[in-house]
Image (cartoon, rainbow, N blue to C red; front, side, top):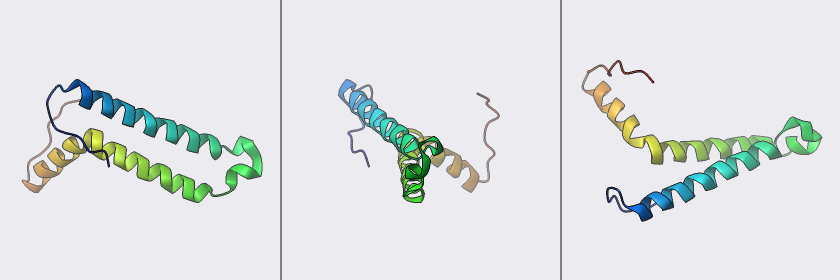
Length: 88
């Protein structure tokens, strides 16, 4: 997982996170391309492993960029409190 200092508004931290995020997105796009059925039988080889790898990347991405929100919602639920009714 990405390691970083938690200094608010640290430009270097933001740049590192952006670089890391773009690397994950690039890897996900490559996995998608490698497993595209339009590439014939070659794309089926190791598709299960590649799909699982993609899910691991998405999980890590979610933890780094939305882990705080996930933990907040879990805390509300554990306290028996309802989440806000905010919408996107």
